[in-house]
Image 1 (cartoon, one colour):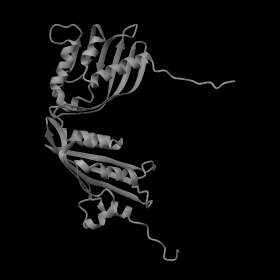
Image 2 (cartoon, rainbow, N blue to C red):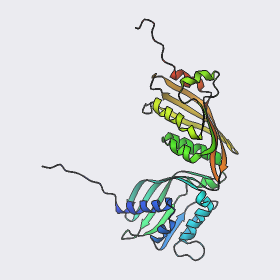
Image 3 (cartoon, rainbow, N blue to C red):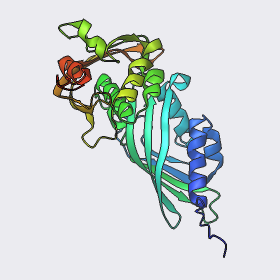
Image 4 (tube, rainbow, N blue to C red):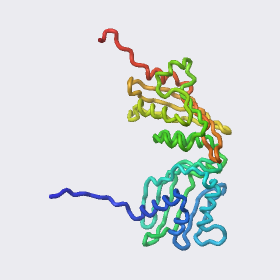
Length: 304
């Protein structure tokens, strides 16, 4: 008998909804409106501080129709200046005509705000699944962008999130200033000793991938003990001070970089309306731990 092949086709609901997100990221909000059923509604559950919160209805004549909704987003985000890093549906759960979607949202708005996180969206489709009739958004990622939260802290958290996902190119492309300065292990008592660490040094935007690539090449990310995460944030104006814990195995020596409470300092600036990192100094206080982990293990004098 021949082999039995099982295929899993993407449901029509998911294809249709994914298309709506594709239109949004492509700046084609008019296409989303065209696919709305007569009387379709958008409900944005959020504080009034978020300019596009509230209810919006297809065909409304009072300034709250669907095109008004997208125009309000465009205006509040600063139009073409906005950097849309990510608007990615992570999973779909459909019951009848209603689909709930967890969506990863990362946006740097053209008026200096940071939107970052995962929020729950709900879509309801027409019976024939060719139109959408309702959309509801928790606005979980948008609240802090408008509630007075320190945007530099939000930027620092965004960078940590992307680093944890290995999105180093996105960090460089979207979050760094033209004159970015990235310092690693520059508080060491003897900077000459830091040469054993392949990512130690001072880097600008143009060569900032070098330390990330060195980490990727020399750290054992699949190690069960692996940890490199922030533990605290304290921000004022355009400066954010953080602490972080690290436990990373070095491939060449088998030794661990292990340190708790290393300090990181990030400063930000505005470029063309968008908040970006101006500087980031990393692993302050932990230089010796990094250096020691890269030093070769001593060879027993009786060997060889």
